[in-house]
Image 1 (cartoon, rainbow, N blue to C red):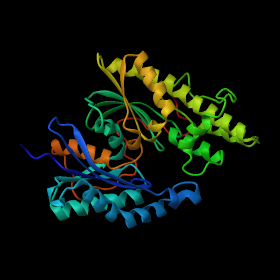
Image 2: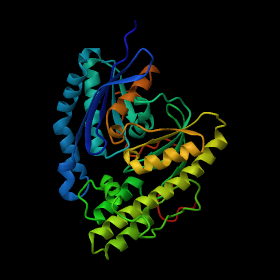
Image 3: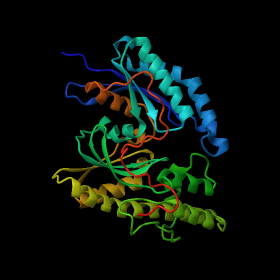
Image 4: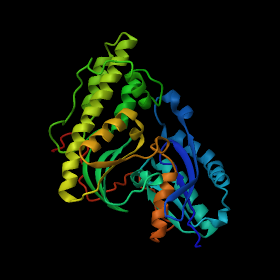
Length: 357
């Protein structure tokens, strides 16, 4: 029996320090042997958001211990590792540099191949950690920094169908939570508060709802929430606004996803259509439920990573490393950190005022 590859993944693109070791079984399916994530919520809580310098310092303090813990929990001897994969971008450059430098040094010390991973590709492949997923598929990537529809043709082959022209959906959740005086990180709490409110109480805007294909916009929605919060006087009004915001997001994603389905089908004439939703916002259960029903109604198979793997983690980085290892796609030890690194590098940059759709 041939030895199964063992890949160490390292993630430090923002405010999670993470390390994971994965392999695969006899069927070629990935097996997560360890997945350690250290959050920095307590570090940034008093500032209401991530402070890059503090995040980088925390990564430097913890990364050695996190990697050691991942190795110990996996039961693997470090000499058995076949490659080291580290996030190289996109992200905060001071944070990226910590994990990237550590990964390079670790690979060099073991004389093993080094693999630089695009953080977004990690999210794109994350459902492979718990599902059989073959190319091609339609991807909705929704997180604190990104909101995109992409056609995933193969490893490293992406065509962007739509993107946000301003804020990411996760940023809209976090900013709304902050306006409602919810402690950082407040985005995930919106869904909880929404259960207590009336989703029809506030008529919130849905920017570029009927134009722009499957491009997205959340800045106007965020501004509307800001204006309403200035007049909120009761807890119930806060619950109603959370419910209205959650409902508005669902309506936007429903409409834009149907548009993305149409665009995807024009370039992929397939019987077995697959729709993958990944990124931190994919953990929102109401959004999951709505998109699953939409897929059922349109003959798409829906796939999501486990909720615990929706946020930033190193298992998804190791997953990309595993696929690249099998293709012998390695990188040199002088590979730079890349703070802006789109999956579709040919796509037109659409962010900013005055964008024409």
